[in-house]
Image 1 (cartoon, rainbow, N blue to C red):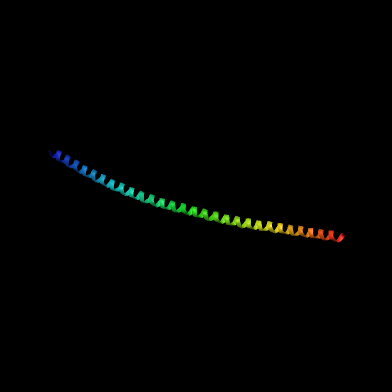
Image 2 (cartoon, one colour):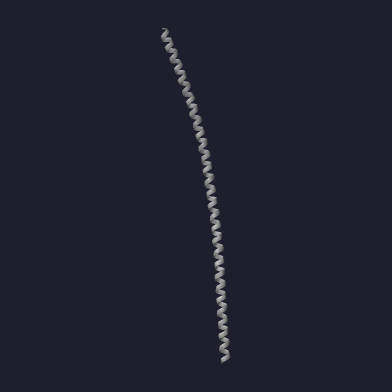
Length: 106
């Protein structure tokens, strides 16, 4: 009988210990889950911030490239217009000289 009580006592102690461990494990699991969720939220926020910064940088670079291209195109257009103007002035001068020469000989 004494052995039976000892066995029951040990069984009760093991059961309480197992229940306590199970409860502690569940608390640990919940804490780990909450920590993982917090870490995932922080990582998501960081990823969104990085993506937003990358988009902003890309837009700024595109704007700078577009502005540089527009300035280059404007400079090339002005140079071409100046060149055409000079050619027109030269052609007008040649035509005027030919007209003057033609009217002098006649």
